[in-house]
Amino acid sequence: MTDYFKQIEIRWSDLDPNFHLRHSAYYDFGAYSRVSFMNENGITPQVLNQAHIGPVIFREECVFRKEIKFGDQVKINLKLAKSNDDFSRWTMVHEIWKNDDKLSAVITVDGAWLDTVHRKLTVPPKEFMDLFDKISNDTGE
Image (cartoon, rainbow, N blue to C red; front, side, top):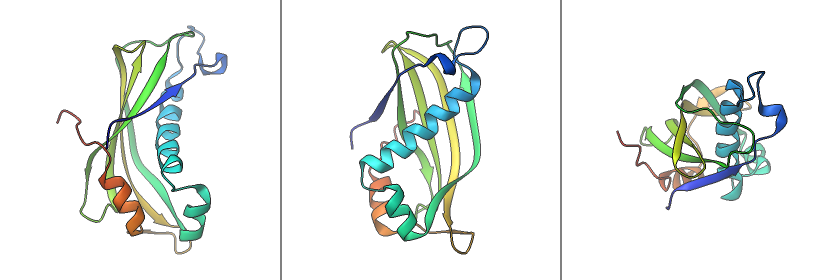
């Protein structure tokens, strides 16, 4: 699969008192990217509900490199850094780029799949595994 990127529009409400992107907005953008990727590839909220499964996050970390301000053009990618063989546990990396050439932040997320009925970690359905197997894993590691 080619790299997945999502364009982000910076809203006034995304800014902090210093007029740059507030730290929690970066995490919101990562979640938006992951959910958009799934939704655009057929793993919609309805599919998740029918399968009684959802993603759960164990750790989320952001390294801030360059400030983002109102009016910057921003895009975020999605890469699979690692997973176990059945994709029940995974680590994703998002790079947030501004104005096409400045790496502004790197978000690393460790997660898994939760059975929403039994409230226990689970293995995702095969369709999920097939999709996540296609995510770019070129994280430079």
